Image 1 (cartoon, helix red, strand yellow):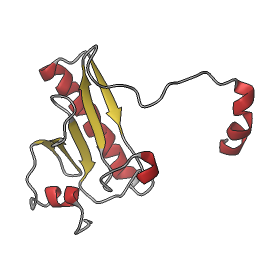
Image 2 (image 1 turned 135 degrees about the vertical axis):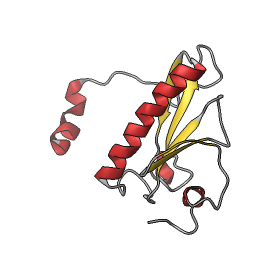
Image 3 (image 1 turned 90 degrees about the horizontal axis):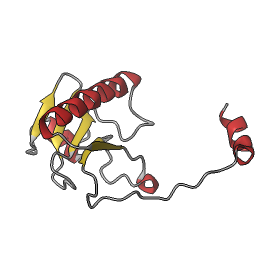
Length: 135
């Protein structure tokens, strides 16, 4: 299943060019044309799924398997000091292309990227109500 107006579906169908680095029956990995670091790679399911809430369990498993394989390949070939994975859902979650995708961003100590938030510890007692709702 594809979405006619989706740029990532167009890449899957060969209607839009991309620097493809891996492909199997269910997934595709290609270099991000708006790369923030050398080797910035996107992994997508071939079947259109808007986000993590819409993807099938089979396609989600295939995506994470490809992410794992590409992470190993990036480490082997590019030798980064670290790797950041990023996956966003919905406009409020910072998603900008509405076809599920996972960013693999090779990292170097002291590079120009920074965390999007500052983490502060929260007491377990403050988490109790949310924990009860999710359990």
